[in-house]
Image (tube, rainbow over all chains, first blue to last red):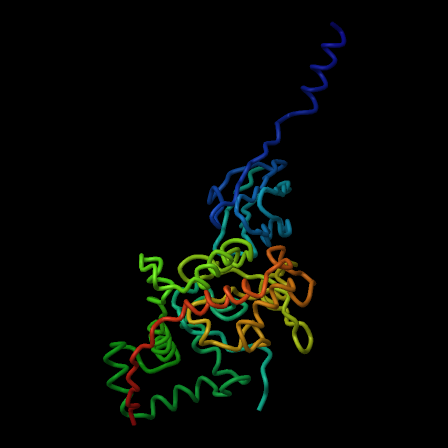
Length: 104
Length: 243
């Protein structure tokens, strides 16, 4: 009983809020969503479902990242580090755009 | 005469391009139209361009008719050039007739070439849709004769954009040699050989590009297919330029 109580206490202290993973797929040269709301600490998993490569990146002031090129069936993940608005694009296909609103 | 590093991009079906120029630095045909007046090409300052067009009396009523209330400036000159470019269209090629149901419009070689194009040769990874382009940017392993051309990277600082250029349309491709961003190949056969080798350079090469195992007949089939994308000749009246 004492052991169980300790576990509950540790979990209660260590996880004030659970970070979420947002799955965004790429299909037909488009993101599965055009806009996304998330929180600092969340992750976004980008999954390529097209039979050619994508290169997801952001050069936003809030956070910049380059996930490199990845082929069909592969995924790349990015952790959201700061609050603000991120404009995410595909370098290969400039018409692909995703706006992520990151809250604290 | 100065030889530039890039080949002139085709204006065939440029009306459908979301971005213009090999590196996509221009967002519209109007923006693109004024680019070549710069020092490297026509060496005609825009102020001098405006002065020359304004000085030709015959243009006055024509511009007034086309753009009422707008003076002859670089803005209206760009609109006029872009409007002309939007009329340079290619469709109704033998391939289109075949898609529409005319089974005899394509030779057996061209039909086999189309199968290769969308299949084993993987051309359709980039050359997609009615205009045979994904409107995207790829490093396809073309070797530049001098220092490597940074291509799209000059405007998008993403590593894979080093040496990446816009996928050109394949409409009327048999009429628009030389090929690739720097015009390094004179024939479609040489282009096919480039892709069979999987490109000449491997730095930042797109993963879409890989060596191909194609027989001599298959290479010829691909070229036959590309030749089927040539539209019928159009009658174009040469305008009488105003004085």
